[in-house]
Image 1 (tube, one colour):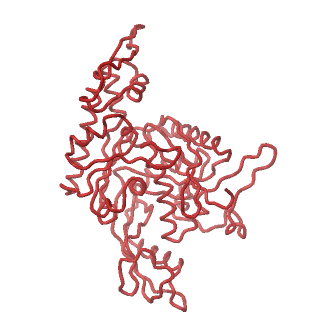
Image 2 (cartoon, helix red, strand yellow; image 1 turned 180 degrees about the horizontal axis):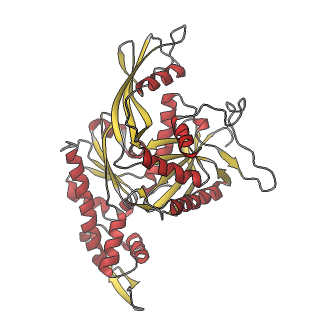
Image 3 (cartoon, helix red, strand yellow; image 1 turned 180 degrees about the vertical axis):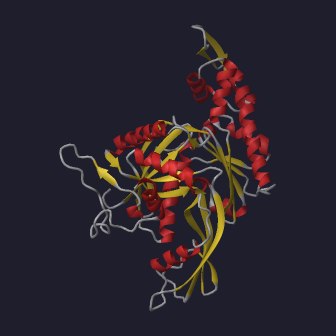
Length: 427
């Protein structure tokens, strides 16, 4: 493990906080640790209680640490919400080397040049995603390193977010004793795992149904073209069950997970279970058909809202169809309901990695894959993105560093824009 890169993703959701530790070896990702905890300080995808969110992050991190017997020090975090904006950008530089060979330094310079735009003071640039590089007029180049040229251009997308929202997330992570080395856009990260290249080229809608919100993203020509968030999710289903059956939220969640069925026609009346009625010591018996009626109605509403958002983005027909993911999609009958509603090709995306083969982990695994690939394209040192400290009970803790880092003093590396923002808020 010492010779491989270790990455840690932090997925702060409304219902759960997920920490995933990945090991990258020869560009292949292996999941070696997972930690989850109930998210207590979030509502509809936004932080409403910093202290509770901090405690939830700590719980998830500690669980992942115990799995790999290491201490997590730095994380890559995904960010999402309607405050995210996509903006096209274009950068041009002259190739600096004497032999005119394009290297990492030229890539960094052209990406920096593309960021020289006017940004409102309340917004912050969190990432630049290259669409294509152009070398002396030759376009559609994915990676120009090693090519010869005089003029290097880059066309891409600048991602900006609300500085207040970003500040709140950074503050929670800092109070949890962690450092943020990179921030990536969650729809892009989820798409890197959930969607195939052909789907992204043809045009596809990715619907990620979480606990408190649902993210709708449209990809076309291999790039994210639009994204939106609606404040509806699995928590609304739980609330419906709680009110409809007059049971506690905890029991409603348990019934939804263990006995829920999203397609009424396939639900089984013979599957029965008991639940305690609020305000009474008595237990009442229910069957799957009763709760399926409520679950189907709410999930159908969520999918209908998602379809309406896609139409607002001016996409009435998508050749790639619909790809669904998120915790709700693990429920039986969800796929059948979506196929019945959309009348199109629909599938559910599940990460194909041992230990995380559930739709709720799609975003967390995607953050690892996307951050690693994006760092390679932009010429970043991914070995500096996340640091793991080995736990040694009887000896002082030693920092694991790669061979590239051994020649420099920790903490003296060039700071990223996120690191500078971090200093702006907390120094």
